[in-house]
Figure 1 (tube, rainbow, N blue to C red):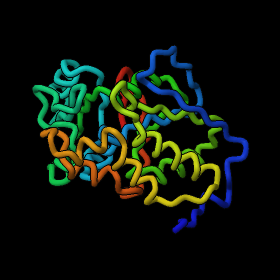
Figure 2: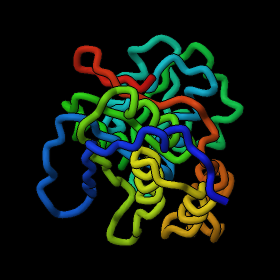
Figure 3: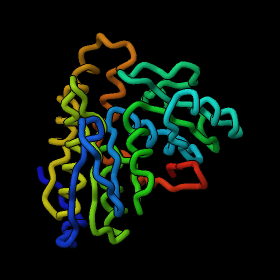
Figure 4: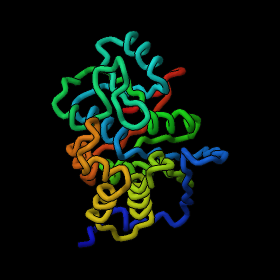
Length: 242
């Protein structure tokens, strides 16, 4: 069933859209207006859960060592992260698991996050006028924030495509947000299905990867579970998701 959408009343007729793939062997173009870095499985689903659980901010840091150092500098910080392939980052309190954070005590605490895809995408496009971390659980809120901002050009950064992964979980999220901004009808269940059926999504279903629990996939495929966007701001040399 097609879901009615208040954004459809004001389609982004003049808004331009482009996409880049973080892991392709190409020179990534500079995007100066609005950049939406997407990591559905799992960085920015995890970030959304952390904020929902009351974290004061997420500090995306590229590199495990840098993340450990920053966590030691921030009062009561919680470290969350994974290395390439999804295994927990050594020395961190939590892996990159949104389901694991559903019961974590994060209220009033900063979270330091280091991941191999989403965080790297934010760092690459940190100079954009507006920068968002996005996933399917907060996609509609992201579209609404972009609309309110008066963006003229939106660049979606697909982080989940690798040589052995189609990245369709992230492409689906980009398709959903773009459709909302264009005022096109959407069927949320179709986008949730694409997350589950993506190459990476199937690894969670297989049950043979101990650090890829099915609970993470089911959470990541919940369209618009949260009603907030995740803009990224800069405080000196640090980046924060709030």
